[in-house]
Image 1 (tube, rainbow, N blue to C red):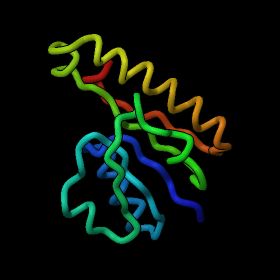
Image 2: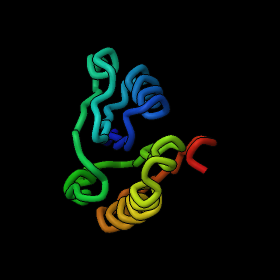
Image 3: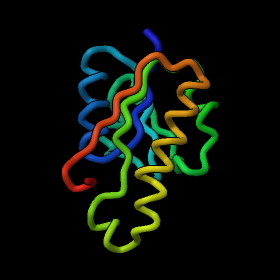
Image 4: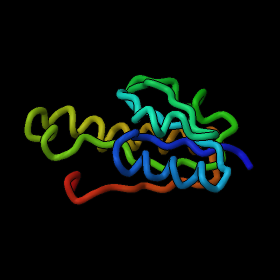
Length: 117
């Protein structure tokens, strides 16, 4: 089975990585901050420090079967810097969708939380 790319190493992304690892599925977390050491130590879990607005996404998506997109600027960040929230939450998602399409990724799941909306 090909690996899965998970954007966002926060609560939802780390939970997804833990569940995939427990099932023997390799995955790579992508975020501007690393996940907890306990998640990084799980079998099959890798990490790439990158910003979705600037990273070479097509390169990251090469050989990837699916994307779990959980990266976002949460409500506290939105209040502090609304433009950054718009860039990450909308433009970062659009950029990732486009790169996934161009790379032939078969599955794309957008996940979010109430604080993003």
